[in-house]
Image 1 (cartoon, rainbow, N blue to C red):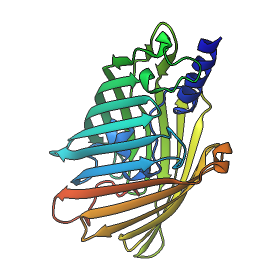
Image 2: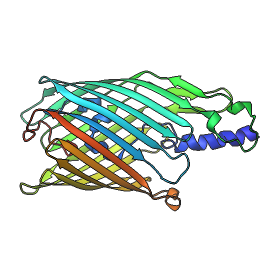
Image 3: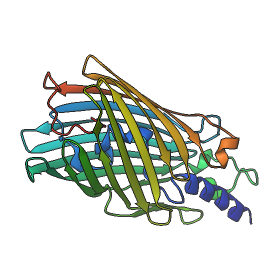
Image 4: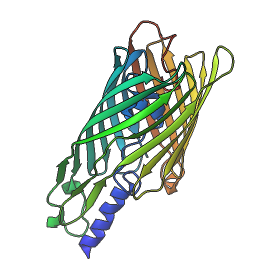
Length: 306
């Protein structure tokens, strides 16, 4: 009986760990670094970017998720792009460490539209540190004596169509599914994700842009999740926006560009689930540096997340 109760507790953690399955971490600021969800995004600008991001979710809740990431992406010549992204994701006793290498190739479809196709290789290590779980029933329970660790290599891909005002992308960062399990207790599934997103840029005069977008995330065993975003850009220096994630949270975004190359972003999220009775503290901060060409006034894909 006690194993069943412990299993329910661990399963509750795993279910909360990305909505009923071990899902990839999701950021409010993915709109500023879209190559983290679609390898086809790598190299679609006329400059490279190096970025760091950290997300503190549900502050004040023991074992709440925290995610850190760092990456770099750039174009190679006129047709190729490469990207590297590293993520450390932790919730309770579970950690998920990922290194993602992306390669993309782009072609012109017309005077206005281009297409980019990308592939990515994934090195992933999952761990469940059962020994860190406090067992209120039996401190010597052998079920919790051993940790679980698994190395899961994978591949994924995506495609992107874009112009100077529109973009539409679809990706599956992992083609293969994995199960992380010990025979006595629990199984955590690493499932396929499909991302589908679209956005448009409206210009109102020389200094004001409005950039709405939408993203759908499809994962087996979990409801389809939608992100709706709107960002206002002033003078190509200040970004202000809001986003809504279906059944999850409402967030505010802000960003500032310093001397053309350095971009600082911040996001604050309010949960819409029952967690709102426990915490309203989710913070996300990101830093990007643009490198390569000295001028950014002629951008191949001037989408809102550039």
